[in-house]
Length: 106
Image (cartoon, rainbow, N blue to C red; front, top):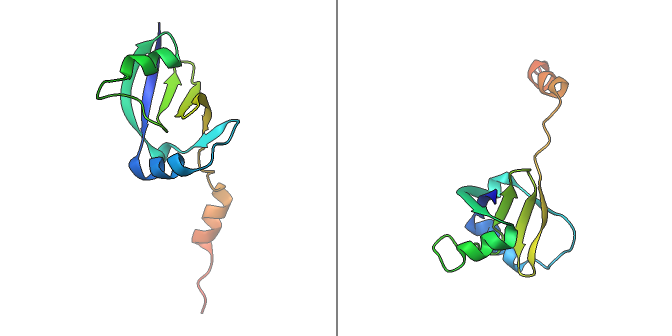
């Protein structure tokens, strides 16, 4: 059995996700749109879904399962599809220092 981490999509992003047209391929997801919701031990993604089905912890459209190996799958109407975390790019340090060290206008 494998251990999967459950990430629940917050309500506002869930409504946008629910009404967005279905796209195939990898779905980019932002960590800020999710809340950690514990772990579940299961043989696979669909087994985890079946185990939680009918409980107060049931998976809903937009919820994510992350395997111990870091593989991420998002629950869609058609099943679980591959997803990847999208992290904001950090500004280069030189740009941050230039903004602070810029002379003030006289």
